[in-house]
Image (cartoon, rainbow, N blue to C red):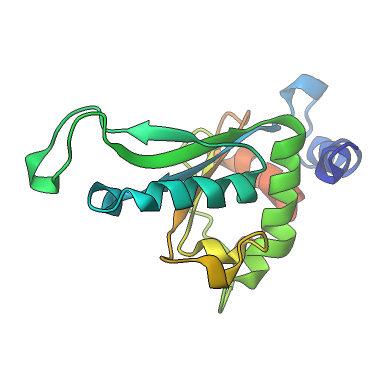
Length: 180
């Protein structure tokens, strides 16, 4: 089964961007490249069980097993040892990326309490957008009763856009909930 938002991109987003920007070549049109979900777990230095729980939760959210991030060097002030597990991340591409993007926009973000939209200022200068989520419970795959600790995550949407304006237009065509 093909991802719903992949068809939406081909049927709705491409024609809208051609009309709005005047691109002549279909390869000039920006597209989603990948979505990276990252959970930094500083408290894992004192409690190693948090890493295992985070891996399980991120697997449910993303639909694939995350990679465990390890410390590159020791930092005594943070009680951090070299090669100690301090986070996990997952990179989504193709159908899984479109499925996650669809669930993020239509299910998860509207579940945020007092949600008024996301900031337009979180672009990195090259058309990529990073969104911080304070609680993992906004995703319907996560059961509130099974959570020991609320953890946040960063979601980076990587596009093929050359600048912030093109990246904004792309996400706006996907009905990304930007604040007015």
